[in-house]
Length: 217
Image (cartoon, rainbow, N blue to C red; front, top):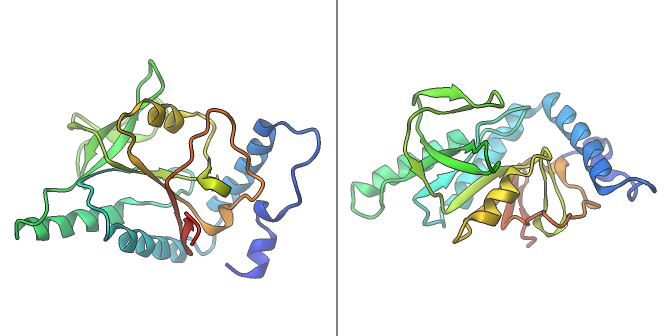
């Protein structure tokens, strides 16, 4: 990311304006970052970099069921990298070294507003959920041990700025054992003044187009 890009990022501003609540600050950052993300002139280049970061990071993981998401509002698309991860598992499976790997996508439970993960594969039947987001249709429910989470922004300690619905926080609080969680976003999404609220749950790692953003090396 060049100097001009960093200077135009919401994360480069001064400390939080006086008089704003945490929710109000998050709403401002959320709008700025989503607008910036949807207007990126170098999105293809950034996406390619983050695909590579994901693939390298996954090499050391032993998970066989991974949760991801269907990208909206200019989000990074994790599915191509995960499909390659799945294909690599099939090659290892032929040698008896790896169980079949599965990718899953979340579906919102309308009652408790948590997420249930359904198996996804390229070309599987899809339908829109209540929010207009594509979801797998009539596929198997699975429990991922690793979940990739979209980040609008992220801050110190591995805390994430999402869309404000709280779906991931509620889901992670309800799952036992808790899956390993990895945020995916762009480097300009770093918010040094992001402060967690009581319900916010930190991620275990955050990956961006410039590398591993959390935990800090």
